[in-house]
Image 1 (cartoon, rainbow, N blue to C red):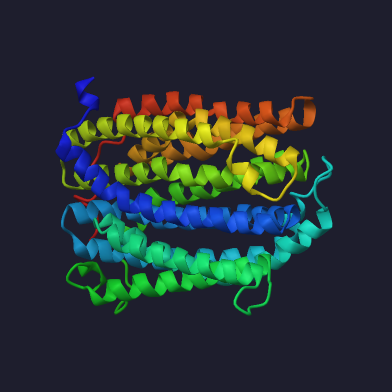
Image 2 (cartoon, one colour):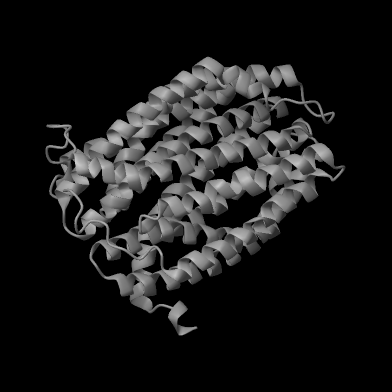
Length: 462
């Protein structure tokens, strides 16, 4: 048991890395929650249209995270070994990846966005107007496309800064961005201070504006603080990346990026399966996910801490220390998520009452929130195990552990239960969430075997 509990120095280090990430993500998700509530005050159709588009945008966002994180695995290890030139090369690789994925995202969402929105629109309850939901979703999407590039570049900069131990500046830029988002949401959604009442289009404009603000802040700071960020010196003077490093990033990172794309696509597919039961289900899950995202920052931020701390130790060749610290991080993640789950369960009946929607939607949302709350410790462990495996470059293993599991287990289960049984949507949702227990068992076995304990940058190109 003592191996799972750290000393004060350990927890100070973990919290030093985790809290800024948690604050940034927490504020971002809190403001997203306020956005969702504001749009929800306009009507169920508007809220559902925005929720559907955000599910599509989620796939793009996660693909960007995957592209950045794939190179970031080596970036953290290069920084741990004191190789700034290696960090600089991984930064350039992220640039190419982000530009390519942004172009692809624009092509797909601009060309087939309307068709994708319609796959989520089904009769199944008395709540909502399908055509109105489609119109609102389409308008929202057309504006949100403008924000794809700045979002991608922000992830490129903030990801690299975090890998080098700089978590405060991404947090500061994120706070500024969400402040802009919140203020302009209020002004443009409801038409305050003489501005036109734009509804969902106002929400989209505010989000895009906030992304440009965040990019300007974080890019300017990074380039004007070269002493703190030596990797940025001459980073654009040449776009050369050594061939061996490109191959190493592709071998290590490509499975991760594919994994993130398939996982996020799988989540969108599961949401589409749920939507067959009607707009009430779409609206209920949207409300539940909105509050869940605020609480999820705990295990997501702790996962980032696992990747950074363990990755730097592996890069420095401290393999036994990495193993010992990882055990403590896994235990800490489970305990934190259990505490968060209790709070989330208690507020479940209160949060849906804020929305201007039907009693049916509110009741469904309450039940979905409580199911997610009960599963929080499972989410905490699987996320920490995932980042553990990823920190040692075992991205092919994480591919099987993560996205393949979604497509082989979760999606077939939900698809069959939704389309071929008379089970209500709440038992179906519960069954899907409980599959996380299987992932816990798989993750525990992989982490315990130590397949992830390796230093990848001793012989890496720099």
